[in-house]
Each structure stands twice: as C-alpha cells, then as structure tokens.
Image 1 (tube, rainbow, N blue to C red):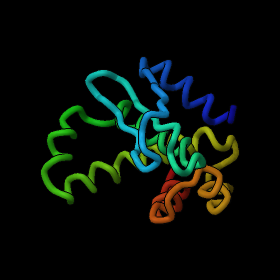
Image 2 (image 1 turned 180 degrees about the vertical axis):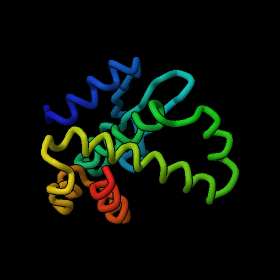
Image 3 (image 1 turned 90 degrees about the horizontal axis):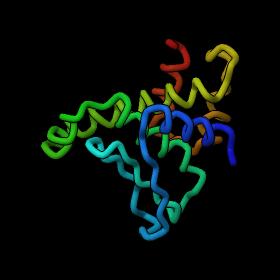
Image 4 (image 1 turned 120 degrees about the vertical axis):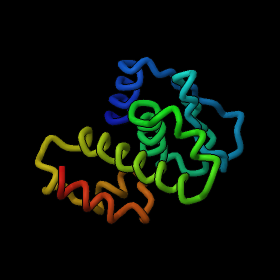
Length: 134
C-alpha cells in the first residue's frame, strides 16, 4: 500500500473517521463525506485510481476542518459551494504537503507533487501559494 495512503488512513483512525470502500458505484461517482456520521465513502471503482489519495485527503479535510453548517450553504449557491470547496482543497493540500516531504516545502517540485497525487491542474496556483506560505 502507498505510504501516504497508509498515513491518511492512520489520520482517519486518529480522528475517529470511518472509511468505507465500495465497488458498487459508477466509475464517475465521486467520494462523499458524512459529517454527522464521521464517515467517508470512497469509490474503489473510480475511473482514475491515481486520484484516490487526493480524494481521501479532501474528504478527510471536510470532516476534520469543515463546519457542520457547510452542508446548508453547500446547497444554496454555486459561489458558496465554490468557497467551501476552495477552503477544503487548501486543507487537503496542506495535509498532503505535510505527508509528502520532510524537506522544506519550498524545495518541493510542484509538478512532481501534483502528478504523484493526480491533483487537478486548476489547483496549481493554490499548491504554489501554499508551498510558499507554509
């Protein structure tokens, strides 16, 4: 098993978050976090398995750093949903950056980091910003 995936699973256990892996979903159904249940459902049938680590970090960030009231805002406007997801992506990236390297963040190769965890390219600016500010 991938070392970072193991560390994410350890983090989930430490935070009392249950992870359920299922093959019952379509290859395009994304994972989901249930805040009130402290549970994440991961789609092991996902069309791009390289994204599992970022997806899991993202869902963990929802449960560790998210606000239980986010769900109410999440269903209101696209702008509110975007704001919530942007904050959660930052937390997910911070989790991965911490697990990725023990060297100073400013020495991380951004392209390698993003490719290794299949981080969506639209987050490149956030990765650069976080590397330069952490």
